[in-house]
Image (cartoon, helix red, strand yellow):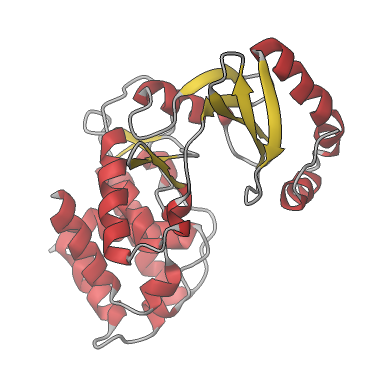
Length: 288
C-alpha cells in the first residue's frame, strides 16, 4: 500500500479519477519491476501528480512522478521538454511511460523557496536557469505561444480589456521561426538545488518567445508584487536578459489573467503613481 498525499487524492477525486487512485499501488509496483527501481516516501506539496523518492538498481537516487489523469497536465509535453534539454536547466529524464503518464527523473535538492533568498537574487537565478532551456525546437509537437495566448477565463472590465489586448498582441507577435523552447512555469517553487546551482522541474513545455518565461515571473511572488511596482520589475527583467520590455509586460498581464490573479492590487492600487496608467503606457509602446 502506498501513501497518497491528501491534496493529490482530493485532486484525483475532483477529476473523476477514483479508479486511478485504486490502481495506483499496482501501477507503482509494476513500474518498480519494469524500471528496476525501489520507490520510497512520497513528497508533500504536489497537487496533480503522485511524486515519490526512488532508487535505481545501481543506487542512483531518482524521483518517480505519476500524473493524475484528467487534470489537463500533459506528461508527454513534460517528457518532450526533458528530452530536448538533456539535463541542462531541468532534471535528467531516465524513463518515461506514456500510457501511464509516469516519469523517472534525476533527484534534485532543496527548493528555492526554502532558502529565504531575497527577491532580486531569486530573479537573477530564475532568469539564468530559464535561459538555459531556451533553444529552437521546431516540429517537436509542443503547443505554441500563439496557442497559449488564446484565453478563455477573463474576469473584470477595464483591466480585462487591457489584458485581452495584450493577449491578442502576443498571439499576433508569434513567429514559429523565432520561437524557442520555454519552461512555462518559472518560479521559486519549481527551482531545486543541483550541484551548486538550480534546475527547474515540472515544465509545461511551449514553443514561444523567451519573454513568456519572464512573464511568469511578473505574476510570481504575488505578495511581493503588491509591495512594489510591477512596471519596475518588467524593466529590471528586460535589462537583466536583454529581452523585450513590452513582451515581458504583456505576457505578465496574460499570465495574471489566465491564473485568476488579475483583479488584485497590482492593477487597482496606486503605488507612487497610477499603476494601470503606467501599464497602459507600457502597452502603448507596442502601438505608438
